[in-house]
Every structure is written in C-alpha cells, then in structure tokens.
Amino acid sequence: MHNFSLLPADVFLVTTKNIFTDYDQKIMLNLYQPIIGTNATNLYFTLQTFLNNEEKTHYYIMVNMKLNLEEIIEARTKLEGIGLLKTYIGNDNNVNKVIYELYSPLSSYEFISSPILNTLLLNTLGKKDYDEIVNRFKINTIDLTTYKEITMPFSKVFHISTIDVSDNIDTSIEQKIKNNINIKADINLNSIISLIPDDLLNKKSITKELVNLINNLAFVYNLDDLAMSEIIINSIDDTKHIDKEKLRINCTNYFNFNNEGKVTNAIYKKQPENLQNKKSDTSKKSKIIYTFENVSPYDFLASKYENGKPSKSDLKILDYLSAELGMMPGVINVLVDYILRTNNNKLTKAYVDAVASQWMKSHIVTVSDAILFAKNEYNKQKSIKKINKSEAPKWVNEDVKSEIASIEEQNQMSKMLKELVGEK
Image (cartoon, rainbow, N blue to C red; front, side, top):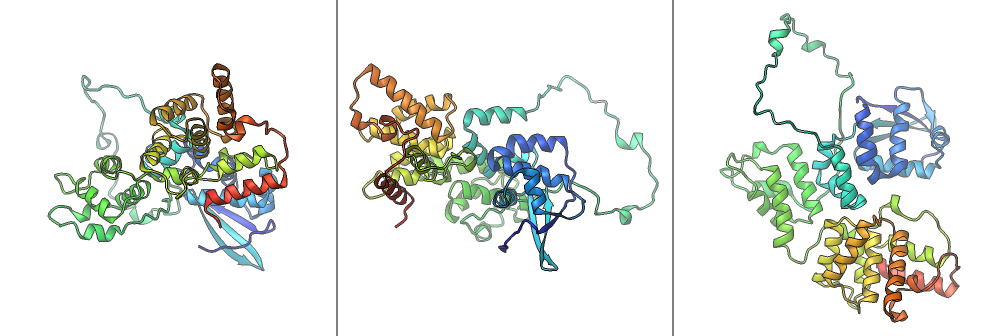
C-alpha cells in the first residue's frame, strides 16, 4: 500500500474489462450503497462515464460531483475496500497520473452469501429493512415436477465446422470480473488444513472461494485456529469435501453455544458514517451526539464499569442488539445509557428487549432520532408516574437544541469522550 498526495490538477484514466448492466445498478443502489454511502456510489457511476475517454483532471470530477478532493479520496477508498476499484499511480512530467480500474459488483446471490457483506448490510439497515431489500432479489419458483422438459439441445439446432478458433480468442473483450475484498482473519488456514488427516479431507477440493469463505467466517465470529479447525472437521461431508452451508451453520452454533461470553465483531463497530450527524458545532446536543456516534457499544458500556470490563450477561445483550436485531451502534449507546439511568443501572434482558423492539419498529437508525424518541418516551412515562428527574440522562432533562456549551462543559464532554475511547 502506497500513500501519495493527490492534487486537483493530477490527471486520471479509467479502464475496465467489465460489462456494466442495468442489473448492476440495481445491486449498487440496493446492496452496496447502504454500506459505502452515496458519495462512493456516485463516484463509481461517475467513473463509468469516463471509460475509454481522454485524460481528465481530478478537478473535473470535483466540479462534476460537487465534492471537494478530500471527499473524493474518501469515496475512492471505500470503493477500493469493498472490491469495486483498484487504483494505480504513476508520474508523467512531475504530474501524478492515476489509473482507475473498475470491477463489477457481485451478483445478489454472491453478495448475500458473503458473511462480511451480509453482516455489514444487516448492521447498517436493521433487520426489517434488510429483509425488505433481500426480498427484492428473490425469484419466484414454479413447481415443474408435473411438467416434461422439451428443450432442444444445442447440437440439434446448430452445426459448426472443425476449424479451431481457440487461438483467435481476444482476451481484451469485455467480461464480468469481480475483485475480492481483502480480509485478514486471525487464523493460519494452511496450518489448520495441514493438521487434518488426508483420509478425512480431500485437500484438493479446497478452492480459492472456500478459503475466502473460511477467512470471512473467522473474521465475523472472532474464531482462532483451534475453533476453526474443530468447525471445519465437523463440516466435512461423506465425500471428504467441506460443506459450505454446514460450515456457516457450525460457525454460528459454535459461537452461540460453545463460546459463552464471546461476542461478534458487531459490538466493536462505531456508527456508520452515512448515518452520522453532518452538523458540527459546540452545542451540547452536537457534543453528545458526537460521543454516541464515535464510540463502539463495547467501549461505551465498558465506561460504565469501574474496572472497565462489562459482565458476560451485559455483553450478550449488546451482541443481541447488534447481531440479531441489527441495531445501529450509536443507537445502542443511546438505548444503553437511557436504560441504565432509568432502570437502576441494570440491563435487564426483558426490559431491553421491550424497548429495543419498540425502537426497531419505529425505524430508529440515527443517534439524533434515538435521543428524540427516548426523550418523548421519557416524557410520556413521566406524565403517567412521577420519575426522579436526577435519574434521567442529561439529554432528556435539558433543552439542548441550540444552547452553546460553556468552556467547563466542553472540557467535561471532551474528557468523557477520551475516557470512552480509551485515550489518555
């Protein structure tokens, strides 16, 4: 990986061997955009318009997309990270020359089958919206058991000569090429496979696709060599092949039932950038929102403990909110803070589930919406029964819409944020 300073005057060319279809656009807008955001998605489509064109400067893109250079670079890195773009840098007469190589998005089946992308989409959208989008790509199946196939085979319709045209095939013709996401799991797969006896596993059956799946699953479920080795052995079928579906199920079961106390990576993630508050000022509300958005649920909950280490039962609740319900990290922080302050510092599973279900039904995905919703619910409860005002979170009791925080309050918020993210 090489860093370089990109300037608006630096030129670029766009290349690809791919064919881009209307269906690709549907996949980009429905499956990729929730994860990478609108800027990255628009950059992908914009670069397509420059395919096989003459050199342009990056200033041209900035004007075209109404974005500054920093936003363009950020969007580009998202496309690179998710496997849609490769970037090459050269130098011509002291001017950077960039080559952007575009790749096709995965098919809907490949995307949903990817543990990484599938988890990212669920975490970003929440269970309800995730299910709605996935349903858009489901096909209507027809039972053909009572029908007889009468399809005419190729050989009965077409006749070709014996001329060998294989040497004349042009490899530069457009085609569908996909770029794999670079995932680094904390396992040594070669070591794991080498320790499995040959009479149990046909090692020649291990494809690049299978290796990628194993690494992805290990990353999502925080699995080490020993755990993954056990799971792989239990996923081998009668033909000495690793059953992919069985592998997925066994990873989930191992995590849920055999690794008590461990949680998925979801609780260590922060609020997705495309769901963060774009407004930045020194008001109390902005400070509080920033804190909730830029701390993972794990770190936020850990800050509530004197020893900085949450209990296993509380971590399970966080994992339930993140992995099963698909609640956004920042929203989880608001919910946890609200419940702890109004429920005697207890995260009771039944109570958490009731509140979380209500928030999910109301499609709460941003911190701002979560704060407003919690404040309204608090006021409703207060009208029904008298609640000790001191127990409620500050953002419930105080009107923080436009009030500017004092220097002392800003220092307190800054200190709170540093403690939450573990800074000294």
